[in-house]
Image 1: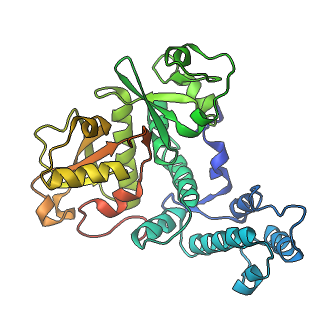
Image 2: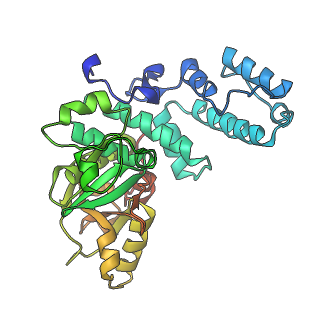
Image 3: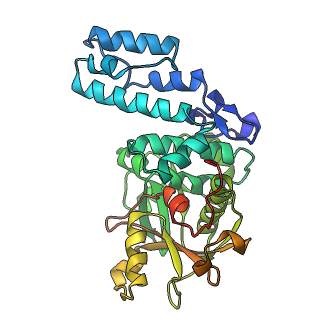
Amino acid sequence: MSDTHDFWVSCGHHLLDRGEGGGLVVTDEFLKAYLARPELAPPPDACAAERAMHRALLSDPCQPVTPAQVAAIADEDARENWTYLISWRDHVLSHATLEAAYVAIVRHDVKFPPIFLDQLVHVMLRNMLDDCDDPFMLRAAELFFRPQKLLLHEGSLLATDAETVSGWTTRSPPPLASMLGMHTPGIDVLSPSNADNYWKRSESFDMALDLTAGRRGLAALGDVVTLWVRTLLAVDVRIDPVVELRDVTLTWYVGLDSTATRIGDALWNGVELDQATQEQVVGLYRLTFSDGSEVIETAREAPTYLIVAGSSDGILRLKPQNLITGLPILRPKGAAN
C-alpha cells in the first residue's frame, strides 16, 4: 500500500513483522505500544511495585512476569489490568503469528476482555487488506471491530460508528446530520463521489456506510467475510447477498452477531418472525464452498446462510469469531494449524 493510501495507522500494523506466510509476528515495538497506553501508564500515585514493573517491561517487554510481581501491586484495578495484559502477551508470544493466536483464542474460548479481541481483529484486517484499493470494503471491514449505530433515512439503512455518534457535539452539523435531526461535527455517507476521502479520514471513523439491500455496502461486507474466511481458515468460499428471508431453508446458518444468532435459532425451530424482528435483519448472505470435500456431509447439499442483525436499540456489533467456530468445515485448517 502506498503512503498516499495508507489507513488505520493507529492499529500498530507498522510495528509488526511478517512471517513467511504473510501473518503478523509480534515484536518488542508492538508490545511497547501497549505498555504506552494511558490505562497502563502508572499514575503519579502508583506504588513502587507497579512503577518498577512498567519500567522493566518498557526495557524488555518479553521478560517473564510472575504472579507474585503482579500481586505486589497495591491498586486492585491496576492488578487486574496487568493480569490481563501479561496473560494476553504470553498468549500471543506462544503462537507463531497473531492470526494463529486469535484463532486459538476463539476455538478454545480463551477469556480476554473484548477490547483485546477488537484490537487483534483491527490489526489483522489491516494486514489482510493491505493491497485493497476499495474504500467500501475498508469501511465495511470496520464493522468487524467497531460497533455501529444503525439509522434509517428516506428508506436507506445507514451504519454509523457508534463511538463517533456518542461523541457528537453541538457544533454546526453537515447536511446529512441536519436531515436526520442530529448534531454532529461531520459525517458523510460513503459514495463513489467521496470515496477518495476515506483514506485521509480512516482514523476518524466518521463516514457512514449504506447497508440497504442491493447496494454496495452489503456486497462489500460479504467481500470482507470472504477474505476473513480464506485467510484464517484456508477455505475458499463464495458469498452472495440475499435480498430477504422468505423461502430460505436454513440447513446450516451462522449468526454474525448475538441478535442474528437468536433469529437463526428461531427460524431453525420453525418460529415465524414478527414484523419487528424481521426489520432487525440487516443482511443475509448465501455462502457456498468451492470444495465440497471440506464441508461436513449434512451441509454439502445446501448453502450455508450468514445472518446480520441489529439489536432492538439499533446497535450492530458483529462477532467475526462466529465464522471461525460456526461454519460447517470438516477439518479445522488455517492460521492455527
